Image (tube, rainbow, N blue to C red; front, side, top):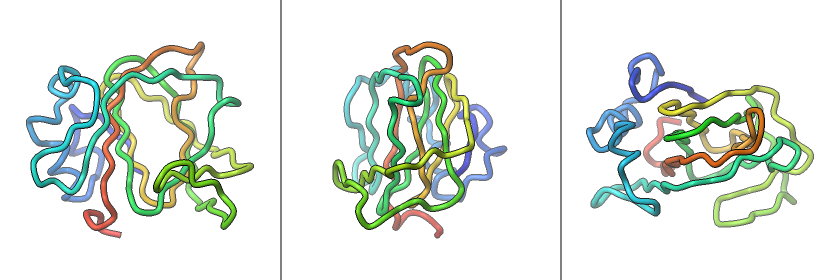
Length: 156
């Protein structure tokens, strides 16, 4: 897991491929915020991004998820959310695969809380559990950009 802010990328300690992606002019907070909702992908890029609104909820109503083939870069464009994360793998053979490469961890409550506001991001590598869209105080609508980075781009 890596956390940072789009306006301070050198401080995040990103691997070169992720630093190059996020430091490109089409990934600034202003540029991402101006994009239409939906899927976005640079021509011939291995990664893709979903941009759009989402509703935060009380933590008890949110699931913990992880991925095998993709890393997530979750960037808040507007609003605030809490993301809970864990430093240990939680995957079990009987975990539900709700969508391709979206596994729901049963009985898992990650113990690290990260508060994200506009411009903040969190990177979750394959296997790292995360519980996104938890309300800070009360449920609210946030707008996010979620990059899906294939394992082949990562230095793991």
